[in-house]
Image 1 (cartoon, rainbow, N blue to C red):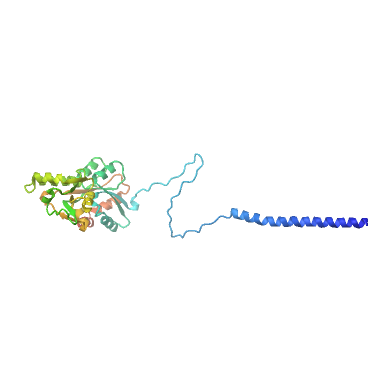
Image 2 (tube, rainbow, N blue to C red; image 1 turned 180 degrees about the vertical axis):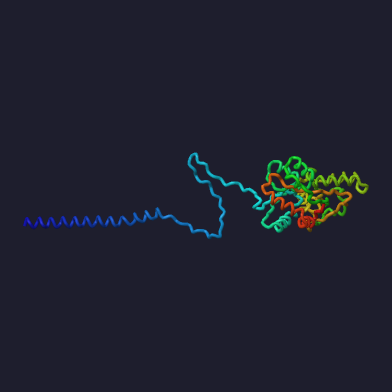
Length: 320
């Protein structure tokens, strides 16, 4: 009996040990599955699909974090070069109407070349150049400012040339509310007139016209004084005078003939006889600081060519 008890005890111990071993193995197997899954989730990185080779994406990249003392790199500023065929033309504002056609004609004559116009009053673009603004070409509506830059040594020697010319004209709103029929009507009480400031080429030209008319037997000093009394604004750019007229803020404005021609049906006009008018001469020159002197020379050649001159003529400019 004692021997049987020992055997039974051994059998029970063996069974218990076996059960413990199976339980441990089962626990180990069930715990390994989530551990493996977690590791895979932590290490697997999503891969973005590659963009097609034909697509070019422009992006702005924020500078990466750098360690102490490290110097981040920067993108160099773009530089205009002859190989790119880019021309930056600082141009009198009175060429605003014709500038798109000039750009189109230049690119047709010189495929691959492009011109960008900075259009403002000649006195303003002259000052910008003196203050270091980059430009390849300068187009002035007044020899006064071209001479000033020439004396300052800003141009490539021999590149400054006369370009075109322009007369002064009086424009009226399309509906002409003041019923202006002649230059004499500009002196009527209550007429509102816009002129350009004398610092602007068209303003100086207008002053020249007024001086001639004051000395004429047809108009005289009384007419001159009455017209100046009717001036309600002096603008710093010729397109600003035209804008006042187009919007009906004034009854008349003194501008160049080219502005009236470019305006189409936006205005009516009253012409000024050549004997009393002021012929404004434009000039063009290549700047020493240009990094695209070859393309700049091509642009100047285009402007002086038959094609360029015809475009200017179509927009009311007069050949020299």
